[in-house]
Amino acid sequence: MMAKFPVPSTQPSVPDALGAFGINGRVSTKDSFSVEYSNGLLVATVKKKSGSVQTIRRSVDGSFEETMLFDPDGVSKEDRNRLIKRLAKDRMTQSEIARRTGVSQATVSNVLRK
Image (cartoon, rainbow, N blue to C red; front, side):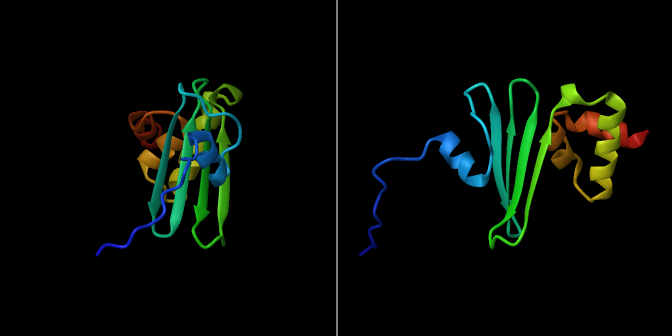
């Protein structure tokens, strides 16, 4: 006989679930988000319709948390490219950098080739 687990009477809303990760502000249906887990780290990323990106990385044991907010309207192209290069030096993949900065992986690749 299979064990029965209680089913919650209500499901958390997406904003509530993202708020549990530390994502601040309202999440709308026009925003995109992803939640990933790998090697003990949860990564939640929200890209707002405006282009700003908020990323939270948190270890499941609570020993590490990193928050990044990137607003492409607030930085020059040169500053954005410096950030992309710094994140690459921190050994992030091009796809991870693209998600955090709100640009395509192809743009990240082009910046890193220069």
